[in-house]
Each structure stands twice: as C-alpha cells, then as structure tokens.
Amino acid sequence: MKKRKNNNVQKLIGFEKFTKYGVKTDRSEFVFFHVEPTNISVLSPETVESKIYHLTALLSLEPDLEIIALDSCECFDTNKVYVKKRLQTEQNEAVRKLLQADYDFLDEIQVEMSSARQFMFAVRFRREKDEQIFSTLNRVDKAISEHGFAARRMTKPEIKRMLALYFGTSISGD
Image (cartoon, rainbow, N blue to C red):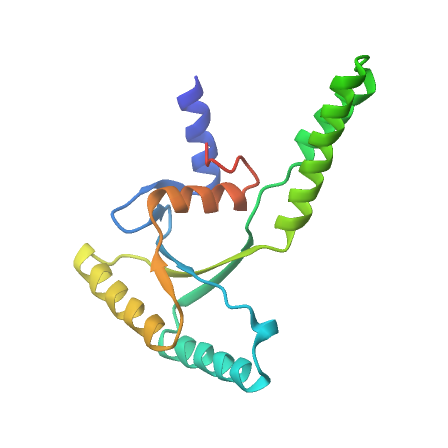
C-alpha cells in the first residue's frame, strides 16, 4: 500500500527516477549544480558589478542554464505547535521550563535559518544520450568555473534534500 501511495505522489509531480547524472521526469532529465553563495553585502560596488557581468556572460554562453534559489531550511511550525500544546497541558514546572527552552530554541533557529538560501544551476535534457549529457555537463561545469562561480554537481542525497525543501517535507528527504 505504501509503495503504491509513493508512486501516486511521484506520478503527480512527474518524477520517474534518479539517473546517473540527476533526476528524470516525465518530460526531461535535470542535472543540478550547487553554487556556493557570495555575500555581496561586503563587496565593493565594482566587484558586485563584475559578478553580475560574469553571471550575464555565463547565461549568454549557456542559454539553457536555469537558476534556482531556495530557502535552505525547513519550517519548524509543526514542532512549535506541538511544544506549545504540551506547554499548555504540562503540570510539572521543571518540564514546562524545558519545553519553553525547546520552543525558544526552535524559534531562534528558524529565524536564523530563514535568511539562509541555496542557489543551484540546473541543466535540462530532453532526449540526449548519456554521452551527450556527459559532454554537455563537462562543458557547462567548465563555463561555470571560468566565470568565477564555485559550483559542483549535486549528489543523489543532495538532490533528495533539495526536493524535500522545495516540496516542504522533511529535511532528511524521506
């Protein structure tokens, strides 16, 4: 029954399988590159302008390159609601203090992580063979590097985590 339910969800979002390079959907195969973000608030205006120029040049050179930006954390609202309910019903003062500390901690890390972002480049393949995909990925990887971006191809666990964040499920990707 569980396997059947998962297949329905997979079918709904068009996911078919993980491939050698990325994710296969009913329409395309996607390969993802995780990009190390740069804190532009500490850079001079000239350096920021240079980064923008390099990104524009990269996108001109690789017009099929797509950019993805995601929050880098999951929401803790369900956990906070649970702890809040426990706080309302708990009689033991020592346990109440611990629950309040847990609630404050969840609130604090959610605020800290809410400004954290992940950036990715995605390359979409429609009907290419493995050799063509490999060749294209090497070319794209080289172009990304030459334009001053630190990026690496994402692994299966990283893609699962990214999809989990995107679809708002658990951070472990389950």
